Image (cartoon, rainbow over all chains, first blue to last red; front, side):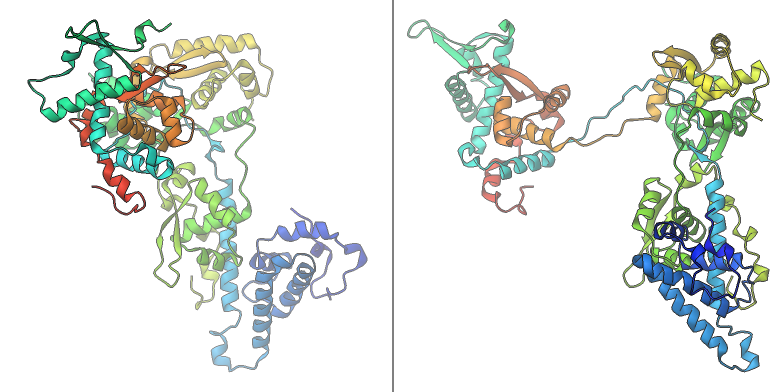
Length: 264
Length: 186
Length: 186
């Protein structure tokens, strides 16, 4: 517990002139004031320290003691003082209302201190229960939970992807690619590119194919045959295929330009 | 292959799941363990047996808010504390008081907490409680500004070894309400 | 108070420490458990006994590089896997964009993808797509370095429920709506 200057003081004394030996260095005072969680905490401290009856608070004493602290806070730690100043105003108001003469019959129900007392008691209850919660054993601090090791078998479900996701990704790519114009491709060309992949795949399996084997003249319609032809031309242009013919009218052979299997 | 052919093996599966899980396991979790249909009543019976099997051993099977877990018996806490000297750091009074208000007065807004504590709630305090998964937002109060309403989580109950909020230490232990003047709201 | 008065209790402390520890425990860790001096030979003997005690049970005590730990017997691995399904995550933006580029511009090299995306292609991205069997290598471009050419697979079409790449959302629409993000082909 932090030793406080109040220990050395007597209730009801004038606090405005601190004796020299009770001087607290500003840094230490800051630490001390930080020990309070707010004006209610400070008030409770003063009440408990001076054995005041919480149900019959001597407002004059309490207000005076409280003000000493607030003055010191104002001097040192302004940003802390806001809530405390509000409380000062409330204390002074209660004190002055108690000085007013009042009819005896309503005095009982209309004690100006009632709201303050209610708040102090509620806060004290919370403060005590908070301490109790703090002391309770918790997982990681007093409670140790079984956690033996086990071999994780990952049964990872791969993420779902649908066409919209893919289209969205492509749209993002296009939005960013400033040189998009050079790559402008239409739907038809997509088919060409698909066939480029298909042809490369077939040539990966059979490194040499006869040109005509690449066309399914029976099943494919004219557009598909054209696309297939365009794909072969595009592959050749990109240097991915080697097209050879020994002599005119002899079979044309298509092979992959670089044989993956022969890669060193 | 992983069909569970008898009751003893079923209980073994429950035991090994509980011994290796970091989090409490619910009945739903246990049901997921088995391919075949298993009755909740059977599970409860087996869990009871398991509790008995371990009655004289180093761990105890306890039930907390989100399910069952094995934990070290209290008498071993001192030993285990020596093993892990770098304990979870204690929370500040502000954090603990805020937690207490949320636990006992939930659901509450920041304003409610400020009213009770008499000081502004530091957002760092709320962040600490939310990161620990002890507190979360459960709604908004239908007043101007629609402030967020905070409540404690199941994880909070788990961590404090409780099944429900009813097991929180009673506040009345501290404030004798009969001491309050009659007109004070309790 | 926490003096360990007999061998059986000593063994219990070892057991509870092992059962609740997230990490394997070394002999040095075990020594820290006890206030009184304990011989390493004694610890080794107790660990051997503990291993025997658990010989027919759900966990086994094993020694790994950094110490001892209890672990679930292999036969329970399938059950535990069901309990802890790894969360199905989404592919990163990098993976999705790379896939989109390969789908629309195939066959492409890493260099092509990097040129279009403006950033280097992480090899992890390609690995994910290849492991999913959505993308594979269909050739090499005959340029210096002979970079691999990637294309989408039949499996990719199957998974996205397409008969051919022609069913991809048409690009012409993107070209037109490039500056109108709100309009998006359905």
